[in-house]
Length: 79
Image 1 (cartoon, rainbow, N blue to C red):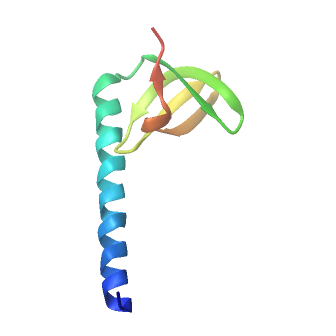
Image 2 (cartoon, rainbow, N blue to C red):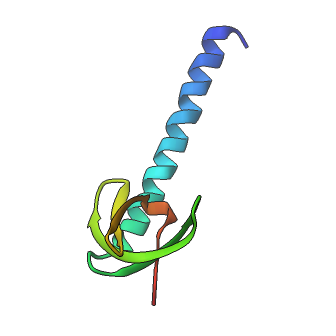
C-alpha cells in the first residue's frame, strides 16, 4: 500500500470507531433520565451521584455540591 491508500484506510477506520462510540453513547442515553441515581468508576475511584443534565456524549452528574462531566459510556444506572 502506498501512503495515499494508508491515509484513506486510516480515515475509514477512525470514522468507524467514531460511529461505534456514538452508537454506544446513544444506547446508554436511551436508558437514563434526569434525576436518576447513577454510578461510574474513574480516575478518582468509584463515584455515585444524581444525573443533572444529559448532553450529546456526556452527562452532568451531581455528587454532593460538586458537578462532574462524565462520558455517557461510563455511567450505569443505580437500581
